[in-house]
Amino acid sequence: MSIVVPCFNEEKSIPLFYKEFNKVTSVLKDKVEFEFIFVDDGSKDKTMEEIHKLCKVNKSVYYVSFSRNFGKEAAIYAGLKKSTGDYIVLMDADLQDPPALLPEMYDYVKNEDFDSVATRRVTRKGEPLIRSFFARLFYKIMKHISQADMVDGARDYRLMTRKFVNALLDMSEYNRFSKGLFGWVGFKTKWIEFENVERVAGETKWSFWGLFKYSLEGIIAFSTFPLTLSSIFGFISCLLAFCYMIFIVISKLFFGNPVAGWSSLVCIVLFLGGIQLMSIGVLGMYLSKTYLETKKRPVFIIADTNMEEKP
Image (cartoon, rainbow, N blue to C red; front, side, top):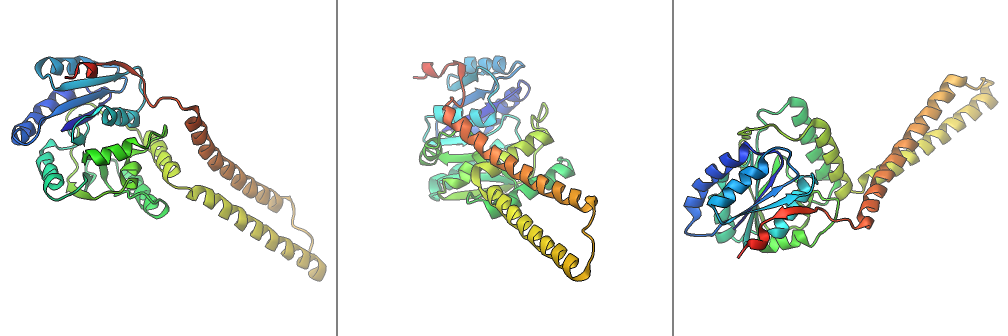
């Protein structure tokens, strides 16, 4: 079983994570062998020093260190790509993903023929209300406009079979949105619910603006609905303009009313201009993703790793 752990400035969390995970290891040690793959996403603190300490006490601990910060999606992709286990677990180092759930997750995959066991939070205790509201709104929107199965409160924490992971790795796209990819590949998935858990150390790396941009990534990656919406706005604008034109002609010819002044004209111009700029912006976002994909740049660059030493 490969345990993939993306890390970014988690020097305080890693020792606590490893200590807590050892409790799970003792429960499953007669059933599976473990390998840990820590992916350092260009941390600025002593994250790598803590990982090196673990490597000295456990020969099954491996690491992949990026040349710079490429983002969590790149770290997830690198960890999955480097994993060799029959079963792969993806989880965060901050213990917001409870390791205690792993025996139950393993039992579902091993004995009940599931290809993946995923987790979701049933509460958002400790989160700002505005952040929770927009998170739930995002999942509601994606449920209606996307073909990918995205569940409200879903975490990246999941246990997957090798078949499931290989399907994910077949999609080597540069602009990655794992929550959508997990649902898009399909397969039989079991969902486990748990209460929200606070971080054991450090601070969240996600700001409200960062999450907003991440949600846009998901919408663009798994839906063309914004493009359709732009077309709908354009059609409605043309229809309203045509109706207003008829109203002005009838008003002038039959009632002798003068044409409305500059204020109404300015409002119309600004309205149409706003729709045009918004539509161009939406089109530009899709075009920018296409542009990045055509460059064929690597999703990540490795600066250091001990995976070559793996027996």
